[in-house]
Length: 439
Image 1 (cartoon, one colour):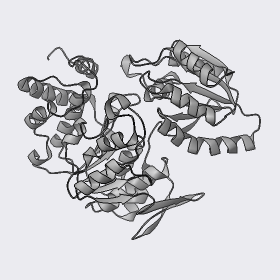
Image 2: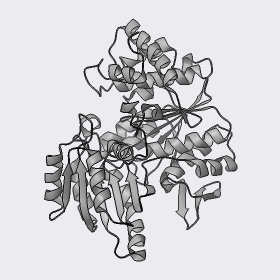
Image 3: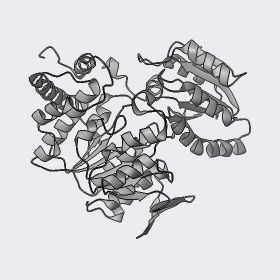
């Protein structure tokens, strides 16, 4: 392994050592985790663990939980995926990305444990175990963990949580999780342990989730039943059976903020109301209805990449767009869009069409990823589901960015969405982030 000198070297290597990018199951992972000493019962400094599963909203929820815990004085570890620009974004301590040197040490430790156990692990499994090794070495008080895919068989689930959040259940990753909410709910409810508090962030709970809660004798708190929120112009109210809090508006969706606050309040952590308010004021999360004025144009970046996520996006975007049009009737709307081929692009486009937005033009490009949909296929799908659309197709996202920047007028609105990759590559093309491939 001495030939692997840089973080880029390691990431390329880790992406090549297993036969498939996604390989559900914990049997191969557990021996390596035991060798690394990262399982909860093996840790000399036992952390408090909050794990978040769900179809959408996991990133916002974990980010706010982490920020509140940091404000409360806990040494807080945060693990999320995927990243927008740099791999380091996935692993944070007290809100700060870990550096390359520490990541390389972790990869070395994980690779030694893997080879000693004589097993093959996927990229996600190796990088997740490396994150846990970092958290162990730094003796973090609180671990905030985002499930990668599903829950029951996800590598993150080898760490038994003290409290769990299931943000919502939507249709996504059907090849691995199933094709309806009951099957998907069963997988996501796999994070639940005996007698554990669980936050559920929807009014409609699948039977598979409620059955798991019953089987595990878990104490659950459900949105609409045990906690609610109400938005106002400059603030919002969070309320449960014990209290009502007047809070500052964060830069994330209020349902995700409510899930995070519910988890904090149901936990055994010592957190004040001021800690919660400071967390709300300080949370920063790119790519979640992320509004930026760039070169006189209003850009909105959102990582929504399935029907559930697009519906969620539109609950914020449509009133925003209506306000813009009321203020400036001449404003035009441009979409910068691309997706991964294994997502349900047809369903997403059908949903977008149902909102009947006055889209001046679509600017599409191919994502720099082996899973990306081909531009000509994406173009055909747009033409099928949204006839008479004006579509400018390009070889890559950078050219699509150049296209929309050239054609959009001052004060126009540009909605950039469809994938984490679409957002990340667009930010790089706009000069708002460094390209990690050039480092």
